Amino acid sequence: MNGYKSLKIVDKKEWGDNYFSLFLKDKEISEIVFPGNFFMVKIPYFESGAILPRPFSIARVFKEENVFELFFQVVGKGTEVFSKLKEGDYLEILGPLGNKFPIKTEKKIIMVAGGRGISPFLYLSEILKREKKDFLLIYGGKSEKDIKFRHYLSSYNTLFITEDGSYGEKGLVTDFLPKGAFTVFSCGPEIMMEKVYEFYKKTNSEVFVSLEERMACGTGVCYGCAKKIRRGDKIEMVRVCQEGPVFNAKEVVWDE
Image (cartoon, rainbow, N blue to C red; front, side, top):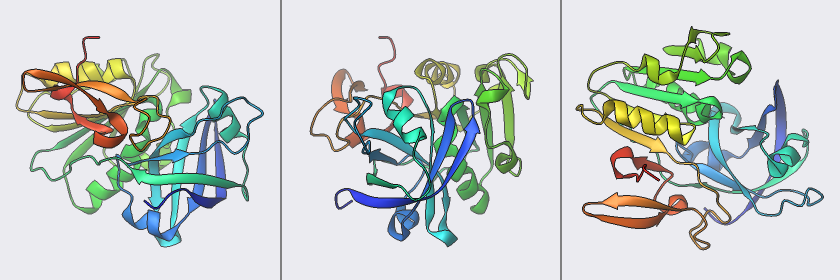
């Protein structure tokens, strides 16, 4: 990480239902980025009134083309600006930042994604398949419109779930969690990640979650992403951008 880079948008995909992907080209980033990492991305203009950079999780990586993908949903003024960018525009990005999902485990890996929380598991599925790891991806959303990357994920061991039953199984992702001892990764709404942890906490499974907190700098200077973490008998305030965003779920203070 050597400060912000100006990178060209080489492609854009509109998924519909306010979901978008921007594809950026950079050889160095494509070689070193790993699932769990994130980027701080500057908003390119200020008519929206949104000034501070926004954090984006890494999605897919296309190493042969030196291209990586940022997948997002429009949820406010900042992401609305990003959704209006087009191929040929430039973005100022900082990263990759943060830590990674720990895949050095002998246990089967269960990945649990909710909505746009699918991002880090796209590339991670490819890595796990390449390394011949045993894994299952459980991917849920409110309805069919929230389930993207269906064709891409069809080559992986993926269970699709929607709350209204419009695609895949009907219910919540927590209804379909397998029993047993696993290494579990989760990304999505915090309430979902907490329930995943509750399901496995009395088993021999280890659960890791990717926390989403508001970030202003991504480098630990502003303390805007402070989160309560339990360390032994003490509760500490840590910066998600510096010590995370991936944490062992047993360390997270959930009951607040």
